[in-house]
Length: 362
Image (cartoon, rainbow, N blue to C red; front, side, top):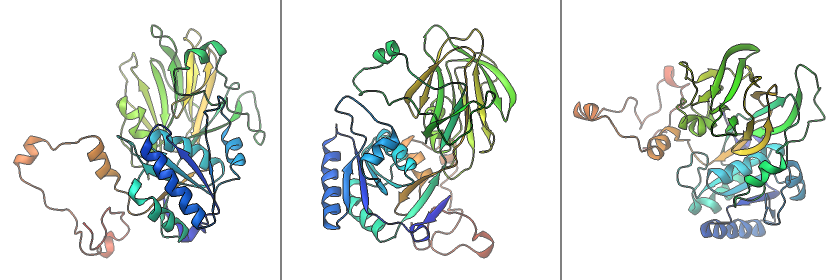
């Protein structure tokens, strides 16, 4: 879903910066953002900074930064995911500046930073409304101290465990609602190399199948090009409205992904003799579950509002980032002509279609 800033009343009074500190170009771009903010009397604060040994929840981070209404990320997809969780909790816009190598999430180049900020301020942008995931669980998530110590391998401390949402009803059958926001995926994966997880998978409350696998994941359309894709899942347009369930290395004949409607929750219950499993949210381990525990994953009521400056060329980026090449047999058959004109407006019966080119464009 796409809207225009002028329809949403976008106003920038406070900017939050999420910076990949290990890249000099990210630090230089951060100086550009700070200078722009100073010129326009906009407050600017660094957020999600964890070089002091501790990390805070998304709510604590945005409160400490004064509640930014625009979050700017300077890095790759990982940095954007960090910024997305902060922007979502405050219903802020997020602008991803691309410094990555294989990313799909960031769409603004470093050279466009100042122009992008001017466009946001002048309401000359498009806003992508991206689906987010959240979950309920049979119990609160936590990572045992001994496992957390094993995971401390130089990427900084883990995020604090998700809080229980006080605004949601707790029920023995429905479980507890956790303060979780995932833009890409929620994953249940094995902890021991020699023991897979055994999981009953339920869609809309109905048992689909019991799996023995390395991992099982639920992804958004945005996350379909991440872990799910690596496990053989389908590529979905980020504008689609769906969830993708994908098993990873399952020991069974049915190894396909299942695409569900956004109002069809996916339940994952660890079976009686399963090994322990880690719960990862957008690549961050947030808890460890044992036999009998379960999580229910579903589309969150809130959505991410991502800034872009022009048409979203998702399929061009897919071709580029995945190094797609044409089949030799197809090339031998000749170069195909454009299916639709790229110099004139579409005829009336095609006016409702979303095309990646605009009249007069290329």
